Image (tube, rainbow, N blue to C red; front, side, top):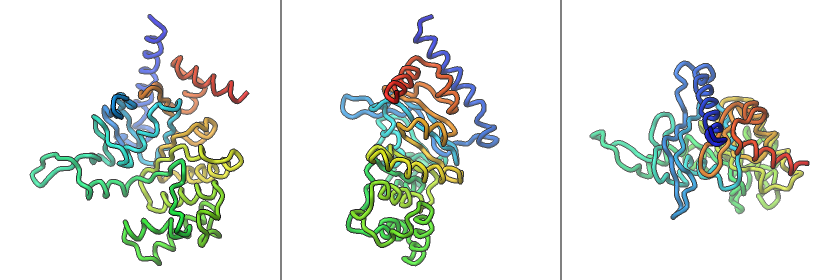
Length: 288
């Protein structure tokens, strides 16, 4: 048997063991909150996702690791409806994301009203904050509460204050993004996503645009939120120590495929594939 075949056999065995344990971890039926089935994505002739099957459960903290260009961010953007799969299906709470049924039960492409309703279940924190520069911190956080959820300014303000206190920025309510550090901007972005009370939040390399000395404050906020356990998190990250500490499950992707998945201990201490071992060894060399 070749080394590649041995690696693939080991990966399949470890994935089977993980899935057998899902009922114990996530309830009797292990019903997924998010499910990707046979998902592919191409940009022109470049296929960045090559047939992904993936389930994510309510409250689960799922870390995606892997080299740049492995398709991690694209998976998150598809969940947020920022990218449409080339083929395959994606569902949230058992409801297809990109399809809907008409009154006669026939399937058709989802309209904007359906997509808008599905987006309310998902939050996303981007690499570059994406705050509105002309709005205060408070208004950045309350805008979607009033315009999307229809809350009054008073109710939205109360919810925003509670969330900003949680991320340590209650004293910055009246500040503008230009008056904040990079770490503070990212914490505002986290508050803006969580204040909508989504079922799942995608954190897309949230520390990659920060100066090294600001990374810790953002990761600390996410760790505290993760401890509450209520919201599922898709953590796309290059911070291996962070993934090890926060995640319930870690997925290693490369070349548009899921190469290996398991608990943090499985992935970081007992890697099965040569591709993952090489990836981790290179990271260690950079550290040293």
